[in-house]
Image (tube, rainbow, N blue to C red; front, side, top):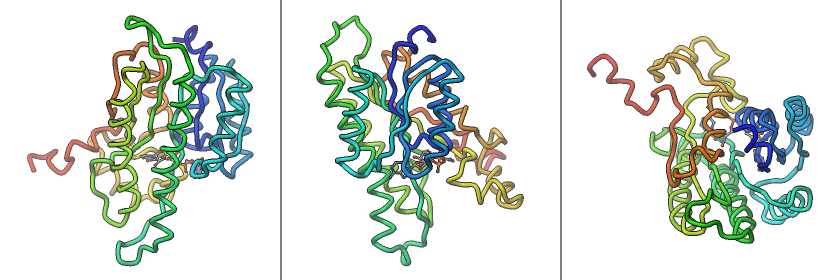
Length: 267
Ligand code: NAD
């Protein structure tokens, strides 16, 4: 993997914190070139880049709002200018804006859909347009491009009080599968990772509070909260040629959260 990753260029969105940061560092440790996209946390993005370089990789930080078409196009233009060929997109950036359904404002709905779903569409489209310019590999050769969507267990587990978020992730499931079908003949692979509960900024109020942490652990048969590294390991594999025959699939990295944990004691 490391000799192969050394030659690869990876765009990671939302890479200034949490899961995106963990994935960007993991690819950097394999010697890859990494475009560290961030939205507002420049310090976090610089920390990611430092750790990529310490690990033997290279790259640069790039500020762009994934829901802004022009900013996404510019990010890809800059990535192409710097590295030529781009091999992998980690479509990770995402937010939550929680509310009961009746109190949910149109702004809260739009913000989450625009960032999580439209943002992943725009970045995926820029990646596909780039991959399509690359020579078509032969049937026995490896994929010429690879997209990994960051979804969530809430692409299949309904989530009260988070209808905007669950809708965005359910949308990603069909975006990923339909796109995978469309571009497979071009030898472009498209998959998703659906994390369970991973301790990051997005859910800090849950894992940092003892009572909420205990309640959360009841939903995880494997009895631990996940770490960004758990997701990074799956991303490294999906991004590698070892998974070359895998497309249109979601890997649930969730400690069993999707296994109906309420039935652990025979229901
Ligand atoms: P996080 O808040 O640490 O990371 C989200 C990142 O997205 C941040 O760096 C943020 O700056 C960035 N971002 C937000 N809006 C953006 C925009 N418009 N443009 C560019 N970047 C933007 O949280 P995280 O847990 O690392 O989340 C990463 C992804 O993993 C998200 O898509 C999230 O839905 C998904 N996820 C997380 C968990 C979990 O338990 N942590 C579970 C399932 C899915």
